[in-house]
Amino acid sequence: MIFETNGGELQYKDIDVPKPKPNEILINVKYSGVCHTDLHAWKGDWPLATKLPLVGGHEGAGEVVAIGENVTGWELGDLAGIKWLNGSCLSCEFCITSKESNCPHADLSGYTHDGSFQQYATADAVQAARIPKGTDLAQVAPILCAGITVYKALKTADLTAGQWVAISGAAGGLGSLAVQYAKAMGYRVVGIDGGADKGEFAKSMGAEAFVDFLTSKDLVKDVIKATNGGPHGVINVSVSERAMQQSVEYVRPAGTVVLVGLPAGAKVSASVFDSVVKTISIKGSYVGNRADSAEAIEFFSRGLIKCPIKVVGLSELPKVYELMAEGKILGRYVVDTYK
Image (cartoon, rainbow, N blue to C red; front, top):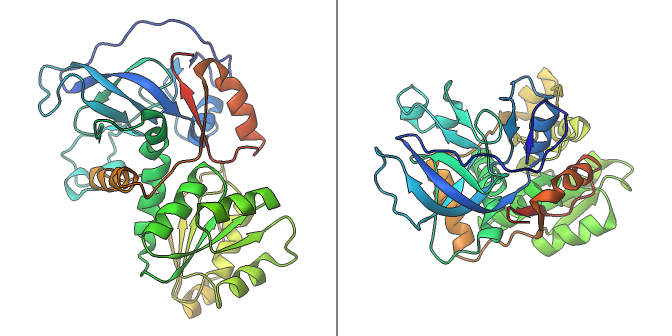
């Protein structure tokens, strides 16, 4: 599934199989999760330009079918995952301190590097995710971005087991995973989203409490009440600027607000007086490094994370984008690259 201009026609067609560079592996992609970032890449509404034409996708799970001449540690038939961070320089100050996602030369799957919405895709052998043999590739696909991203965000919040964490956007693709990772890490979870169906869904994923922004007359007050003083941490995976702003208000004193969702052009304003007196922290969390990725996949492999997915054919991607733009998706859509 390829497009030649941002916002242009999504074309379902045959293209040449890419040849892996000396440092890359070629992966026969079986399934790929669909992330909100893919929608932004297609629209081109972020301040970072995409390559064009572009094959999107960065949650691809499949089998290694070719190996570059300089690659070690991979064998044909291994299961591998394509992540958002396709490759980095490995030698700058960020890469050598395990912050490779901040590498100024980072190569991004489905953005600056053709991604996983195709049957064959390449990935830097160092950054490609290792997937245990026997893994359900459709189920693990969303872990490769959504799972790793929320796991990293929860680590960034730096919480202690037993503390409250609010997940804003709890019923979405990232949110439903964030709820599960938070519970597996020993946190108490309050989910925030809109609609009774989303409330039931969030609770089925492990949320102890739920606040419905569609019916709440004072969301800040209701979140503080549900958590007996405000959550110690907030993970903002929604793409609502208002939701992010409210999180600064309801977070518990000495708590941490983590920004993850990326609504185009959004800003968060924090009162200097309140921020100082409450001693709150506001942090951005991008994507995980190699260690975070391995840990997030390990949680999944242990059966602690079950991604609620709906599998559709790659040819149906335009419809998935429509549903995503309308906010009508519970859980995560995964595309079968052979349909």
